Length: 579
Image 1 (cartoon, rainbow, N blue to C red):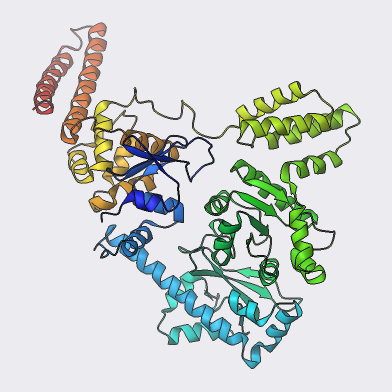
Image 2 (tube, rainbow, N blue to C red; image 1 turned 120 degrees about the vertical axis):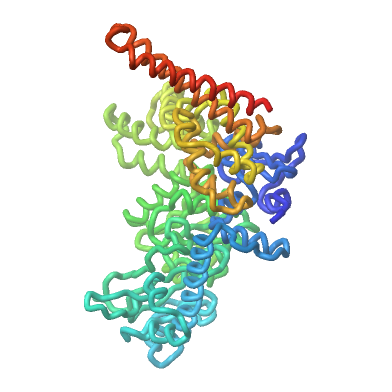
């Protein structure tokens, strides 16, 4: 598949031509100076800031949070190409079939739940929604449904439609009791469908309808199509408004979201009662870099707000906090006071760092040294997570004012905390290009740009040829992908690497010219292995000679013969390398 990586990336990143490449701000980490490069001719991207890199498939996997097969399908559809056969091998086809089956099961289940809500059995659920101020139009917009109390209602309906029982069990829509009976997971509950940002339903939340019904919210388990930490509720409905308006309001629950959307407050998403995760923040960053948190004012809500804010600040977001009156949440506030009052609350929201300083100052006695020390210690941990140095210094100045400590002292402490807390890779973590031999670079470069030739060269190597190499694990992972089609090889390899290895491979692959022909590079690695063996034999000969040649004469003679055989092998390999 020949998809234009520049055309794909430009849909997400503003790029400008810079020499042989195109340059822009990296979409995968916060930066002010562009370090993200796209090489159109070679079909490769690389960020020199965070080290991420790969081909067009890898870009889509990271940007859209897709699996490889889904990325291939996305590109095939976009460019009007037939889907390649056997993409990713038999396992990839099985994974794709599994995901398609799960998506179909959730789509059919959503239709079933929505239909049940409007039956006579669903009248109690309808009243409950209307009592909460949710209109019929909003119910339909959000796809809210009802799961009747029957043990096997959904299961029976889906099996009749041809969906196999094992699939329903894997989807989490059905569960198996100790007795062996398979029953519906959701029974006697309001059902809220959860979709990924592209719109496909991947999970459900079930709200209890009786006071003694536990848990209050029952959620789908994680599956191959649903990971809670990577999903933001409602983003599929509001992402266009978030992008258009330039900010997102984050609330905690389904009904907070429903009430705000119904009131016409469009740029909203819900975290569903938990602090945000880095994956959710990165997902939201595709649409905006400004966030207003509107969590409940109770201790739990404010604790979640604090954790979410710290994460968002660390991810480079501009974060404000809208403080609700005691005892209110966005749902109840809008119902009681209306849309305009809530919009005023958002307009008067405070920058998170100011909000946090005031909140922390109120919790400590700043009139004594111990209170100021505790306050400063708590706030230095926050300061360390602020990625922008200027913003850190500004925060330090406000911190100094609150704590009544000189600005120079506080700034020094803030900078020290930032250095100690600084994320990322250190020079000790990453093999330098000086340590990685030219032959290793040549093989890795070929595996990314010329995977068929690269794999052919790699396949002549034995395990002992890779011993002691800084890139041993990278090359071993590549060898494990021998059954993959060449087109998917680079992306599949990046998936298997840790961040340190991915950083190294991306750096090698971004070089303009190959360090050497892949087959010659493989022969060179064999030659280096022979040299290591010769050195090891010589060390053993030296050891035995020190102990006395008369005692070990036969062993020394055999080692000498082995050394001569290795020398011949080295010369043959040297001729092949230079032929």
